[in-house]
Image (tube, rainbow, N blue to C red; front, side, top):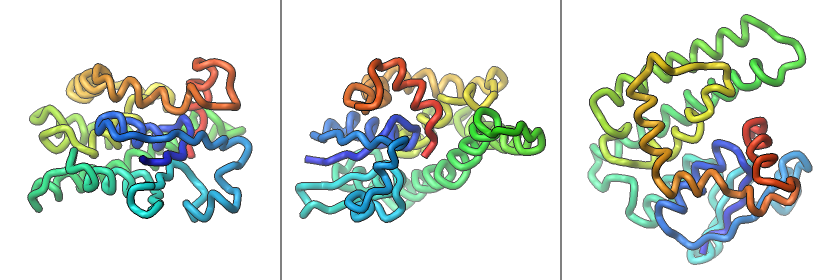
Length: 223
């Protein structure tokens, strides 16, 4: 059994999608970011960075893992799914995973902040992060021209990247000129595990009264 500490954010959705795809049993523990539950002492013992997501693997001596990319790797190795066993295939998956972790997530996150939330609209910052996010999208689009998924077969690279790219409009972006990226978004959106994964933890989120309210919070909270 996996204890899964999460909130409705792209990084949280990565792990819920992964758990759903793997069909691993897990227990959702909703972390209310607006109440700073992620900064409480008991949570910091599991995740020193005070962010979500975090998992605790009860079947492995209550072993805790933080950082979404590290969690995906851990779960892939635990189950033998969504990560090739051969060194070359594994490296390709990890390259695209790092592309998301070091590029798409941080740049799109900043685009969200400056486009949506900054009290002062700083055009330079908005343009900078939107342009860099679109550049990264173009890299994805080029890769997806020749491959159905980022590393060939469905992998943790796709599971990590999709929850971010699906929110492109929240960053003030459009992707009509990136047809391969749009095709990839649509294909993954049809997978039941992806559909169910982005509903976690809406149904157990104590700070909201409806799923729609929780979805709106999920668009806004980027931690």
